Image (cartoon, rainbow, N blue to C red; front, side, top):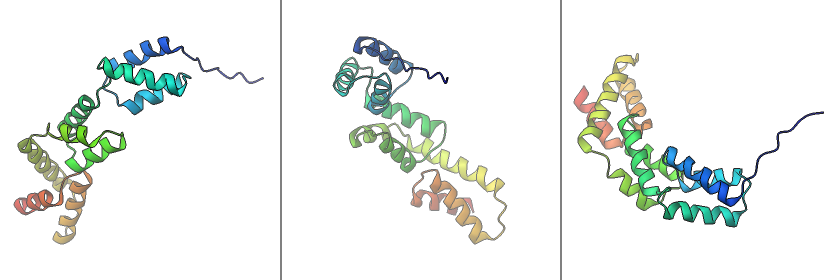
Length: 159
């Protein structure tokens, strides 16, 4: 006989406490919290009610989430604007919150990140043909989310 672990279901009150600590641990999007609440076996009406409560109590704040996401991705992972925007859109963040988040980007630091990535990649790129080399470096930087014009400027200045 195979034993299947029954998933524990929570009352809305219990779920609110669990969701509050889930949100307190790190910034979450409404969708992440919604998915978590559904995993607790709650009804759609209860889920939406709890989302509203958590938002009112400032435990879920998508603008704050966007700010934290941008800081992390551009500061630590050195992502470009385009990749950050795609990431936020994929998480269901509103255009307004995305715009607010992107204001976190300091242009000087952003360009420094781009140049650091270029220098690091240029050292490891084995391609000898100058045209192909430039193309590979360009693709790499664009895959990191940097805008084409900035990438081309950086490549010109690096030659």
